[in-house]
Length: 55
Image (cartoon, rainbow, N blue to C red; front, side, top):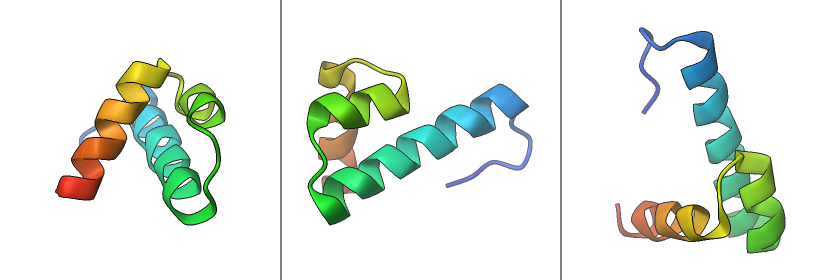
């Protein structure tokens, strides 16, 4: 959930990760590309994807 008290950098990181997760879930974009979009490692992206599927 978006926190209105975030810095610009935090909001940008949030948006990148949300966009990458959406591409991964809805369009089957590769983990490699999605992790690059999100600006995190593939391992970190997979952990976030797993959390978002569960939560």
